[in-house]
Length: 318
Image (cartoon, rainbow, N blue to C red):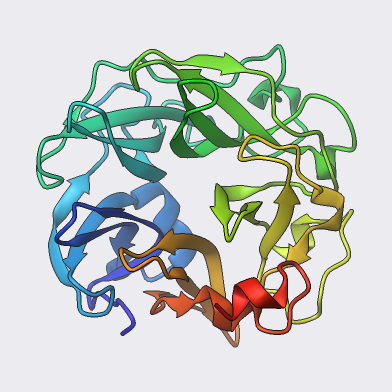
């Protein structure tokens, strides 16, 4: 069942599972804006729940722009939701400010005991470090990319890992996208580290996810074909890419990224249900040049990959 709100466009989304309900978090903005391109500076983080990933109950927004002046007083953008060892839920999100006209991105977090009521945490806003990452004043890209945090706990390092949409400091300005990186021992104190990848033909790599699927470490990310001048792509590509990796922290064979085709869907995400099945979901971007702004029903990963060569046939049909 497509998730659609009559009064708002919805786009980038992510899921959390409390053991009883699936929680969908998503960007939303009023359809009264009329121009969908205006939605980015009016975005808040919406919330809905479901027992089956099909029928959704909308809830009050999880997070909106802060009262200013501060780093997230214009809009709140894409993030992820994880549960800490003490049971506290952490919602990591991107924020942009009015003072900077939404051009500089930072990452912060909010916390909750029940996934319903969220309070901004004491975590300082995480920014791109100019040692390794392109900054706004370099003038090579319209904005300072430091967004879409994806957080997971890595047992090998005993640290929480954050992968971030970012851009490196060197190379062709049209192809500087990298996987940004930060680590934390406790989900509050974060240390920015060098990128986990080098530029590989993409201008941006959005809504990054690193997952282990059927024993394969893969990186899933989004980039519209016109912003990937160094990559060959299928004519039916909708902008989602997948690459093999050596581990959840790379390295990844980005130059050999495959277009990951789900009809009409952008900002696709991988999610493992309680029964172990992997599904793909994302938002319906445009049809015949018209922005749709709805979240498509999850599709079984095995159906998406049927006939693909990225995974062995024995794993995708299991």
